[in-house]
Figure 1 (tube, helix red, strand yellow):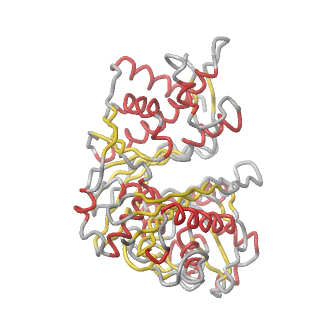
Figure 2 (cartoon, rainbow, N blue to C red; figure 1 turned 90 degrees about the horizontal axis):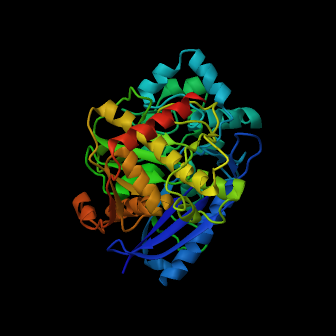
Figure 3 (cartoon, one colour; figure 1 turned 90 degrees about the vertical axis):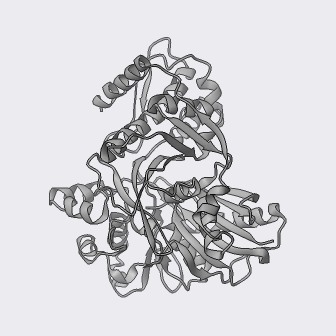
Length: 490
């Protein structure tokens, strides 16, 4: 029996799955790592903490699967995407902490670029907006604040999103590469050509010498070398950004298929096939994957805070002791009691793109309880996603019939029902909700020959639950109007 080792390196933890030839999970492990907040709106990770979390999760998952690591046929990597690392090419030593996708420190830099009239060209080439979310201004900040521009120009420094950093570590510092799904989130890649763009590099003053090679998502990137707990020579057969990986893992292989991942943030992606759909509603165009010479694109809407709002209820307010408790607490009341939470804890993402605003709780009265706050938090998450879907269907002029869901928070039945009610569509939840890791595993399994086609992968997909809309139009209209009123106060 041969196995796939899937690494899902996320914002707050790393998960590793050991998956057999029928896509059954034989062993898994997750390892959290510290979050660093040096200033308001700044978020960092120590790259060494990320790497250690990967090693620990690999060791535990292999042990739980009760396999010999020599049975691992391939490795697949999926990752938090825009998070930026710059390290020394010779030693692998980071020159600064990883700047996380949530970090807003480059807001002023982006504001100046917009004022200079640069954004339309950036949007046309990349499908993205000029926002602190993406990697290019993070690279610029690191080079400016470490004084390492000359080293970057000389090729002595490497830039990478987390996929690239992990590949570099897994291959004993021999391979510096990325894939189109991650490269498309940097503001430096031409979306039509799937190649680094000289004009964009000039705008951000990012030296080409520090950039990784862009390789297709499915194929050999490199082989393991000197990795504790793993033999040398295991091929890394797939790399794909976490949201595109979830789209792949949900078997959304055809144009019009869509999924929403409920993680730290919420990410709604719709497959647009080989067509780049340029949004007029504040959404993003992105590369989903490139496999076997065929390119697939997607339209994406991202809400910066989803599960992170529940974490704040736990860690900030202390009204729950664990994240799953939010459902029980929210069910203790019949409705939100007029309380509205806009979860703009780190600004508003698509389709609003207002990085300067912050969260708000409105409608509190003497009758407000912890239960109302919990339920309003779940509604706030769902309201953001409804904004995204309405923008997406307006762009494509096509209604959505159903939406596949995944991510940790999708286990919350009340959250899923509220989301179905607000979207007015069916929500489909798979048996295996770890679809982000599964997408990377599927891609690696395809690359190593365990599966012959996308159709073979779709046959292995299993549904666990379907949530149908249950509210009338009056409820929906009132809920959406209350949300719009709350947004107008920001």
